[in-house]
Amino acid sequence: MQVAFPPRREVLVFGTGAVGAVLGWRLAQNPRVRVSVVCRSNYEAVRSNGISLRTAKWGAGHFHPARVCRSPLDLRHIPFDYVVCANKAINSGVYSSLSGLVRDKTVLVSAQNGVGVEAPLQRSFPENTVLSGIVYIACTQPSPGLFAQNTCINAHSLALGLYGRSKSASHDKQRESSLRDFTSLESSFGVSPDVVKEKWIKQIWNGAFNTMAALSGMDTHQIISSPRLLQLVRRIMTETYQVAVASGAVLDESIVEQMLVMTKTSPPVVPSMLQDARAGKPMEVDSLCGDVSRLASIYGLKTPAIQAMYQSLTDRVDVSRVTVDPASMPAPMATEQRVMA
Image 1 (cartoon, rainbow, N blue to C red):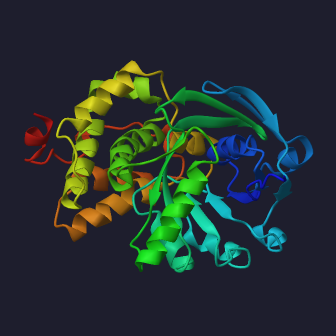
Image 2 (cartoon, one colour):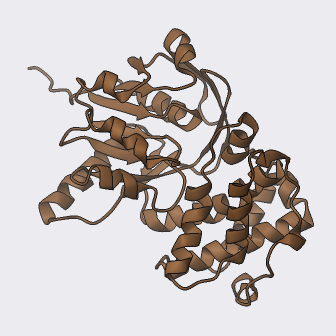
């Protein structure tokens, strides 16, 4: 009697920076998965030598992707089951390069920072299922093709949920099946009980520490040890909390202080925006700052600290050398004391 094995899953990692490389490596450990990657600046290194990793969560590892390319169009003949979008949410126009590759049943997985970053992806492919992901691994790329994961933020490396609304009962069933299938491909992936809530919780941290790190040139411990910068971080986190609640997220009022304590007691982190600033790369200013400010305007909320941070980041070319002066930031909102109590 022959045993029927599940079909092999074809997975494309779109954006093989630190996050994409780690997720791709984990998926490649599954014999049912064949991983291909799209690379930019590290293309030659990955094509020649593969991907090498040093991680706190899984130890050391190395793998050669099944296919390495510069453009998704080079792989449009492959019927991909999943496309993991680990590219930085900077320019939604990049998704046009996927148009010749994404098929009717291809599931798109957003592994990106920010709230609402899935919207451009869904608009580009309105008939395809989009999974919303929250990445919980802090990782870097010290040199092309070499990646390091130093901090474990959560038991799951990637928490996932469905993005958008279902069109019908049958469509909802299909989407749920895709979510369960993709999550099952790696033991450290998990289904989020409330993906929108989790996205906002991460945004509260990211929108403050990522942006402040890029503006000050400091890691998380250096920021939190500075009374002036800590004051600004707390205000940005509080304003983000208020926008989240206005949008319908149900969050604990003590979430800001909880996250500050977590940051202080965890190893220091060099956030991704600071890494990009130091490397002279484009930063996710809109997805981690501007989008929340615009959403606040829709809800009639004032976010002076977020707006000042957004303006400062967009006005600077070399943000890693800027010294932040709290006196230049607007006064705290009147509601801040209630939230922080």
